[in-house]
Length: 291
Image 1 (spheres, rainbow, N blue to C red):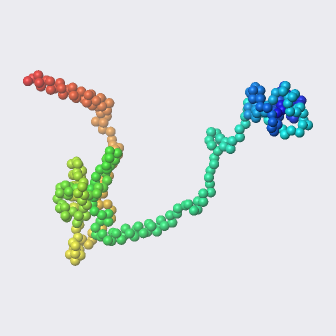
Image 2: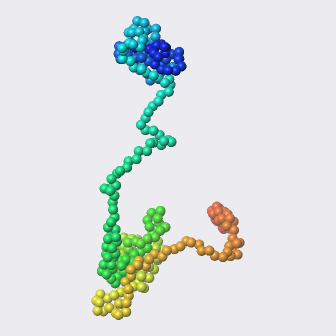
């Protein structure tokens, strides 16, 4: 291996001369490996050089060939840039984000799902509703009446919905026989149980309201009265759930509203709750002392 001592031996670069060149001449093979001397020049010379066949200038006298330009040797030039290393990477960053690599042309035509039968299905559903109404006439289209129950779990128990059927206790309180209830459009659920008096009264009142508006047709059409023929078939929900609104309507401020002190009322309520147990004990002690 050959190393140029100064720029006068290998005049390859144009510019200002320096005391030591950064060019390393390395032969294709057969040189001694002097890693100790290579490590000495590593910090100030090159950062990622070959470092294998490197010889200092004083040892070139009895080694290989003299340093000259006309020697026919396979040369490898290594040009370090001191401590700066330039790394080229295929993934560049744009303001801290990865280089966009969008995948397009996904053959949209073969993956799209059309809904061209929507108008036809709408017409078919309408025709089926008409057929069902004619089949169950003169009974209500929506089916039998159902009770009002609370939704399960603590998350939804403040909401109401329609249940599966009335309990046997609700049917009995409304004065309707169990065998008769199914024949007049009342659904029954023998598994359901009433847990509070409020739901029992609400569903009993619901059955009574339904029974008061019920028109029962005889089984034989010949016995139907002319007045009953004018009754139209019910198409909506049978006795819908009454919606309660919590909206406070605007009204005129009264003298009682002006005299009301909200802060004082809250303070008295907290004091009463805090002193309730102590006051009861004091009253019990006074009664015991009198005896």
